[in-house]
Length: 491
Image (cartoon, rainbow, N blue to C red):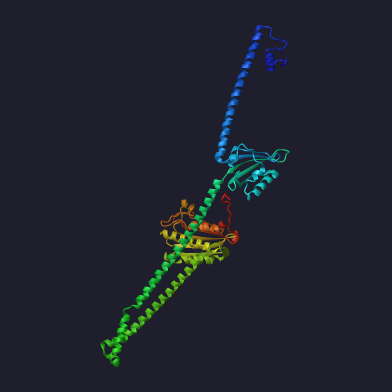
């Protein structure tokens, strides 16, 4: 033990004006000195006790926090890792061991052994990310497929984040990061994608059914007109005056030997020449009427033929990209709805500017236009307060790459709370509607690289639909051309 006094004792001697060479020389000085020492050691013991208790509590809290951290990693399927490039050593959290089914008693695998777990299609990607992280200090965030230790093809999807640790005057040699098992999320995304494809197909078919219903309705109206014409012709052919003519012929044959006397002296014979003259005039009128009805029949049959031809083009294979003259497509869609527009006394106005050809999917464009015209027609039918029912179709080039078709009606309009739902699947304000037509039209517009929008000032204020389309097929954004990474994790 050192001969020197304890520093704490030296401080207490100094406070009473003493040192190791001059000890207290009276009882009062000794008492003051001993009280100071006693108080100092008491306070020191108290501080030490508080410090020990704090360390005990902190240690317990740290253990509790660590336990909660481990539990949180298990719940989140998240593992922590650290890798040092110089030493080649890695650190894995307990949950990362569990995720990759590695025995906790075994050391952390070397980096080359870890690479052996990564799917062959992802190995180059992860190596490139690691090289950029060490070379340029770039943080990476990616998704890869890995299998667990001891398995052949049990690949899971993982979200991997790596963060390089930079140190002054040293090259980057260590990475820290996390890895999260996202297999269930990927499977859910794949299922949602498949359901979305089924929904799109169902919506498109429903939209096509709308068009087919409209076509059948138009043909039904034409058939009604044909039936009226046939009835009119039938009535003329079964006219009772025709029997009278046959009776007059019979009377003439019976009296042909004295025909002159019969016409001038017989009371009945005198009436025949006058009857023949009047009947000839009537026969001419009937002939003209029948000819007119025959012309109407031919017109109606031509209309049916035109509609069926248009239906063939509409029901053709989608995805065929061709050069299309937009005004002709508009006219074709109007013809398909024409009979129903005329029947409801709906007038039509056209305003075409900068008329252009575009390269697009003709079938989908025709489907959209027919649905929009049908929607405008229905809006006018539902609004009885419009004294003049009108649909205005406008066409113009809005910029170097796009044209816009506007279809405006002065019908029932769209209320503010419905304007954002109008293109939603299944949404409709019609009693007998199913909410497929506008939804399928919006989807079709996206598939050919365009967009469908609508504006309305509210109930009774009509609505305007805006169909924007690219001029060139290169501007299309087909959903079928997008490649999804949502493949099965079991490769």
